[in-house]
Length: 195
Length: 195
Image 1 (cartoon, rainbow over the protein chains, first blue to last red):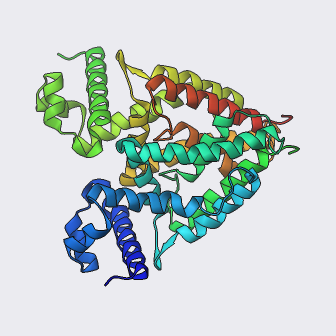
Image 2 (image 1 turned 135 degrees about the horizontal axis):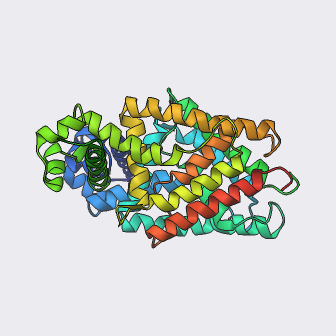
């Protein structure tokens, strides 16, 4: 008998390994056999947890691109300042999955690829971003930030977070993370009221 | 006898067709045979103008990613405002190559790819960006813009210009161009002194 706790654990293990493979190989080059092989499990077991390969890949991306960012936030109340601080914290936890350092450029490239190629992922992303847009809209209304276009604030924050290349000789993991955090702060500083 | 004018014309035609193919197929999927085929020229003629395939691809990218942006600018004198206005104008001419509308997302994706994969292209890009950085540094020093980190201004302008995905249901060519231009202006507005 598989207990609920074991089930949760196995499901998470599968999602984690799938996501690490997606980062390494790119979305179009991940096979179910390789996931099985890495985890040492049967195809039958895999399909207890996921309906299909595309269901598995989607769930893995949803988990690592959204769920870890978006939980424990009250989108109806949080200020933009607190939202950004939350994102800062999450970026630090995000750079490690099960002790392995993630390459943020690969992470961003995978996300761009999904937004262009996968309509389901894109619809899901749109929903998530509409919640973030609410935070920005409220920050403009309340006077927390200047009266700038909402779409500009959202797009620029995303552009800073989501860059896929850096013009530097040595874009190491810690350099990229440092630059994202610094640039997000610099951006908030210049849009906030009274700066 | 091939006159200098014919030579220039042929060279440009080859670069143009090569770049259009790069946009369509991606950097790793362009063959010299296909370029020949499209232009109806022999391999021998092609190699009068270019030393090798990689020389041809590099020259095509240099031409369409940099030469069209960077000419007629005095980097020792131009203000950031005038530099941005220049870029605005160039983006409009850039969306058409020989009457064909270019897809800006593909254009940006190709550029990201080259920066990551091609060390020669990256060195060249670094040189070009160091000139743009000069303009930003001077704008901070002269008080044209606020005292914000130079790297933040450069990276954010590049991030806005170079986005490879948009969170929208219909990222048509005109939408992407419009958003780039609007966001660049919004960004300049909030960094300029006295805003």
